[in-house]
Image 1 (cartoon, rainbow, N blue to C red):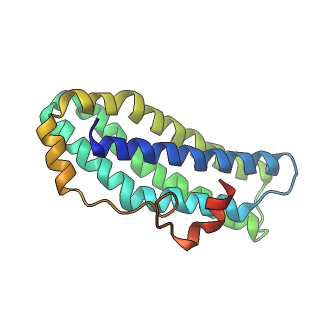
Image 2 (image 1 turned 180 degrees about the vertical axis):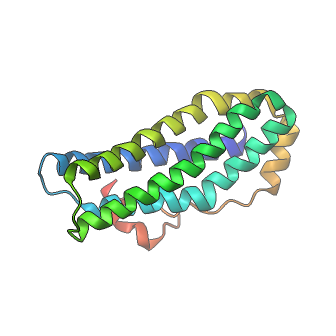
Length: 177
């Protein structure tokens, strides 16, 4: 497997762990138990910041190459681009909702949970689509030489949560995982 696909796959595993943590806290919240909203916010911050700054740009390069070598993948690749945009908006809405609940702004519990579930469901479906549909297409259609060229040209940022030099900003989140 390409180093890039392996890197993206590992990112997905890490993202799923953060999503699991967020869901655990939401279950507590939904059950009227104390929930750590700041931990939820930190998880969302990681997912959106790392996703938008590092993960999605790397995926976009791979998907652009996939589209070049096999134009029949265009529809699937366009779906991913649209999902990236939608996830950004849904992530922002969820982060804003967390801040509203933390500040005790007038937001119904049900509305908060709907925003949360909308984001979580879309994020999990998106990861599943990439893993089960797009990555196999990329493995099949992108040549070894293309992977090698992309691997050499790619300068990857260190994962701020799971990397060897984790950002202190994510220490609480890392400990909670």
